[in-house]
Amino acid sequence: MTSLRRRLLILVAAVVLLAGLATGLVLHAADRADEANRPQAGGPAVSSGKLTLDRKNLLTFVNAAAGPHRTAVASVPSADPGAGRTASDLKCARFYAAAGTGICLQSDTGVLKQSNRALLLDAELRTVRTFPLAGIPSRARVSPSGRFVAWTVFVSGESYASAFFSTRTSLLDTRTMKLVPSLETFSITLDGKPYKAADVNFWGVTFASDDDTFYATLNTADKTYLVRGSISGKSVTTLVENVECPSLSPDGTRVAFKKRVLSRTDLWREYVLDLRTLRETPLAERHSVDDQATWLDDDTVAYALPTEGKVGSTDLWSVPADGKGTPRLLIAGASSPAPL
Image (tube, rainbow, N blue to C red; front, side):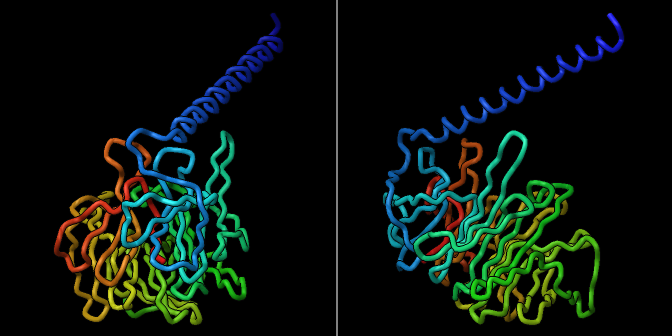
């Protein structure tokens, strides 16, 4: 057998082997998806229905319960979160809504390619505009008026706990459709001085009610900061250290956030920061919370925690914002809460 023929046979064998592996991966993924799409005994009651974002007294979320409505945007009455949930046809990895405007981050994973996009939604959950995403969906927020939308994606790495990760946070004016592709173009004032660095990352935007002020996390030189930003001024200013994924209270006076409790670990505790005094209050939740909390009202915050015994599933919990009380299960099999 000639050397050339031997090499060709090896090449053909390698191609056949890779094709077999690819087929196996596809079948395995399809089997897992099929299993997740089958309802499980004892699961929540979920039914198809119309969901609109201009209704009041609803709590919307991404349904994580197994069944055909898994990852669908769903809703329950705010006063009865344990009630049967109504699921829309829209499926999202992350979702948020306010004032009749919604944002849905989608991620379709294939064998060789992953497709990520942001859908700007109207009150009827119809897509107004689609934006390609540079990475894996992470955070999404809408301003109280519905005018501004922000989202964060992981450009590299898969979580904030990764040794090496990079994020990109974008800001959209829904009136003009002007997109700021990255907050890294905004000027930075750190500890009272202008600051520039190649390792700057932003994530976790939360909006004030004035359609200009926002808060976010700035990461640089292995430190995280809470920053106050101005959309019109295209600038941010640091306030305090060790703040991640801030969420502004409805009255605009406090920020709920996750605080890293051990350096270089993925252990976080949920805190509330008083913006007037910069006093921090630890909340009663003792589990590590890797989420951007949502205020249900001025007294209560909600957040997702992994479902015990179920890989890839989360439950929504709530806890008083004053550091007292105890956490309680809000909605089993759910993520991305957004009160209407």
